[in-house]
Amino acid sequence: GQRVRVIEGLHAGCCGVVLERAVLWECGRAVTAVVEPEHHHDVLLDEDEDEAGPRRISPYQVEPWPRVGQQVCWLPGEPNAIATVTSFHGGDDNGSGYILSRRLYASPATVEAMAGGEVRVGSWVRLLPPHPESSPELDVSTARLPDEPSIKDAQRMLHELNLHDVAEFSSEQLHELVTFPYYHRVPGWHAPAMSAQPTPSTHPHSWVSASAEFLPLRDVYVVRGACTACGDCLELECVTMASHDTLEPLGSESERDPCCAHCNHDHMFKCAHMGHAGECVYSCPECEVSGSSDGESGASDDDSGE
Image 1: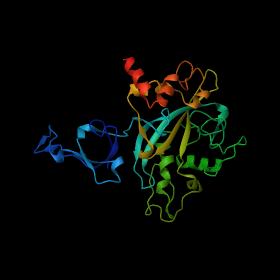
Image 2 (image 1 turned 60 degrees about the vertical axis):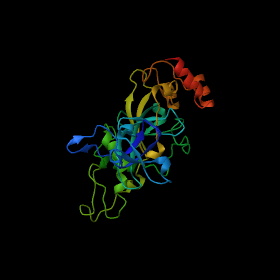
Image 3 (image 1 turned 30 degrees about the vertical axis):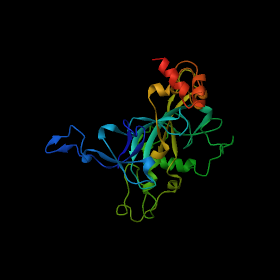
Image 4 (image 1 turned 135 degrees about the horizontal axis):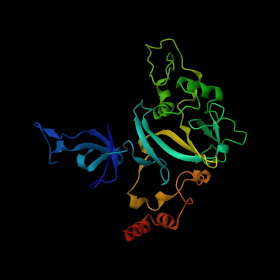
C-alpha cells in the first residue's frame, strides 16, 4: 500500500501504489540481480487506475513519495506553494492523508488569538484581512465563519489538549487538531485528552464535546516567532492535511530555478529582520518566459548556466 514515485525508466515521474512488494531475499541471500518477475514490485500507477492492472517495476527504480521530510507542491499549478511532509495519517477512508507544515508571515494586526487574549509565541491564531490567506468571507468586523470555533470552543479544545493558549504546540498536538475528530463521529464516544484514542468500551455513555462539531480543522496557524527588533512581523506555522492526489513532486533544483527563489504573497508582511535577506522577489522574466513556452526557455537558461 506504500505510495511511490518512479525515478527511472519509461514511467519516470509517474506516481502510484505498491500492490505487492518485490522478493529481494532468497535462500538466505539478498537478490543482487533483478531479473525474475518476483524481483519486481507490482505497482499500480495513478495513470493506469482505469486500465488493466499493475506494472512490474524494479524496486531500484522507485522511491517512496511523498516521504517524511520531503518538500512537495501542495497547490497544483502553483510552483511556489511548497510545504514539508511531516507524517502520514492513516485514518479511515475519509481521514487519511499526509500532514504538511509550512511557514508564512503576518503582521500583528492581521492575526487574532483563537481562544482570545494576547497573541504570543505559541498562540493558536486565525488570519484576518488583508492577509492573503484570510477568508474572503471575513470583513473588518472579524466575525467568525460558520466552521470556525468560538472563543469558548477554542478554549475547550485547548483544555482537551492540556494546553493554555500561550503554550508551545508540539507537532503531535498540531497533528491531532487536523486528524483527531475522525475518531469521534460515533454517539457514545467522548473526547478525552487528544493523546488518547477513545473506544466504546472506555467511554460507553459519553458524547463528544461541543467543540467536536468544528473538527477537523482544515488549517491550524500557530505563532512560531515574533520580531523583537521592530515588533511588526510574526512567523507562523501552518499545519494541514492533504491527500496524495493533491500533491505534486518538485523537480530538480535546476528545474526549479529561478522559481524556487520566489516569495509568496504573505511576504508582504515580512520585515527585514526575519526570513531571507534582501528584497522579496514575486516574479521574474525568466519564469514568465518559461511559463509561456512550456519550460523550454527555462531549460535552456539552466543548461547555459552549468
